[in-house]
Each structure stands twice: as C-alpha cells, then as structure tokens.
Length: 142
Image (cartoon, rainbow, N blue to C red; front, side):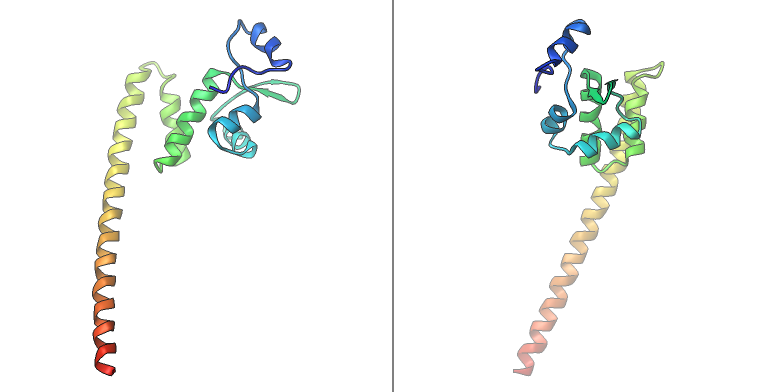
C-alpha cells in the first residue's frame, strides 16, 4: 500500500473515519499505470472514486477493484467479463456467484490459451520442416 493521502489528504482520511485514501498519482504509481488508464476505468464505471472538486479520492474499494481489473487484463479477460466478475460480488449471492462465474471464465480462458499453444507449436514445427527443406534445396544447388 502506498499509504493514505498526505499533505492535506490526512484531513480526508480523518474525515472519513481514518480509512486510508489515495490520490490518482499514488494509485497509478502503485499499480504501474498511467493517470489516463485510471480515468478510463472510471469513465467505464469500473471504479468510482469520490470527487472533491477536481480531486479524485480513491478508497480501499477502488484500489481492490483496480487490482482485479488489472489482473483480469493480464490474464486476457475482456473488460466486460472483468466488470461482471467485479459486479457479481455485490449481487445477492455475493462471493459464491462471483467465484462460480470466475471459475467458468478461467476454464474458458485456459482452454483458449492451450489451443493457442498447440497452434503455436504446430506452426513452429511447420517452420522447422520448411526451413529444413530450404536448407536441403540450397545444399543441392551449391
């Protein structure tokens, strides 16, 4: 955790009952993304920081959601699937429905990646065969 907002942010943390808060700069730095990326996820409604004038104040919930968004993106999930996973947490069945959906998506993603790996291995084998034929043809020409 980067920490609570400082230089004026301490007042924000105290006003909210001492819960830690972060600025857009802190949250972007912590997750290694640009301010633009954070604002993009906000525009899509995936995170919803509190606004105080032009200042965005990120709370633990926003930080957790951003972490889940970025993990989903790293694993190759489209943002709409990430949104569904995150939103399911707030549904009546809560975490159970979220985990069931997540496991189904993981199975689908794994199957897709395994097929891509097989396709890549087949393509590499075909390239090896083609390269060997080219070398043989070149050797015969010399």
